[in-house]
Length: 99
Image (tube, rainbow, N blue to C red; front, side, top):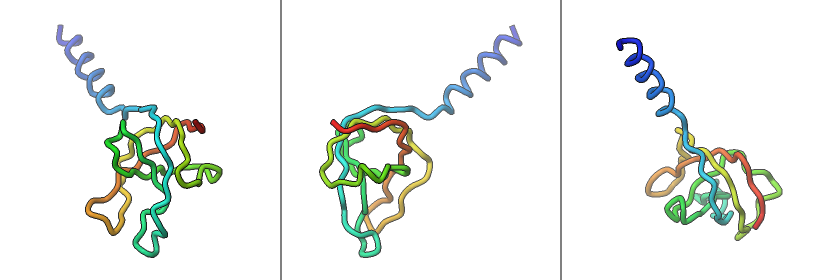
């Protein structure tokens, strides 16, 4: 019984640490030059709360304002520091395609 509890605890620990992957439709936007207090390129999606988020490894061929995309992303622990009310959440792009 003791071994079962240790195994169950270990399994719960590892599964709870896994970062959740989310696939969603949204739009790539240009928020102005970061050197001039803008946001640069960011992503907006209803599934992510309609707030701007930064995509860490967004491919260059997707840097078009108002581009509609479908993407699978994974949240990162780091935040994008900007001159905004709160730092933006950052996500890693796992898969992206135009809609």
